[in-house]
Image (cartoon, rainbow, N blue to C red):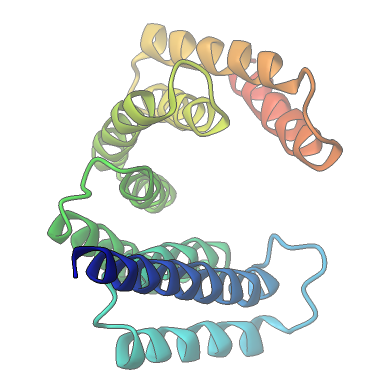
Length: 212
């Protein structure tokens, strides 16, 4: 009986994982196709925003009982809305993602750090430097805990935090964070795949411009 029960549980977990991977993969691909930073986007800005809002409705109506999936898609939606300067919509979805993750006791997960980082980006774009600082610091702390000593997400957090410090007049903190970011990007560039290398090079140029 025990063996049968375990077999059933294993099957249920396997199916759940396949559903999670399939749903997130499909949604992420569709959402990415609407992202204004995606060079291969085939839709207009108006159409793309409408599509993102339609996806949001689908998630709310059909995936509300599956927070593991919905929180990750809300993060995807939030990032895409930032690209269209729809900061209110972006903030709404990112806050939903973070709240859902904390409800699942995943407030210190990589996805939670992603939500916090993007909330920091919104605060930064609105000129709310103190709020941006708090979000970036919290995101950085989680990313260092979860991702180790060197990772592109950590370098991104350091870069954004350094830029925020600069606006707050914290010159020494700004330079330290940006130089740490620069060193990490240069390390990550070694052995990076072509597409990833291009992104790292762009980020490196932005850091150098920030350092003057």
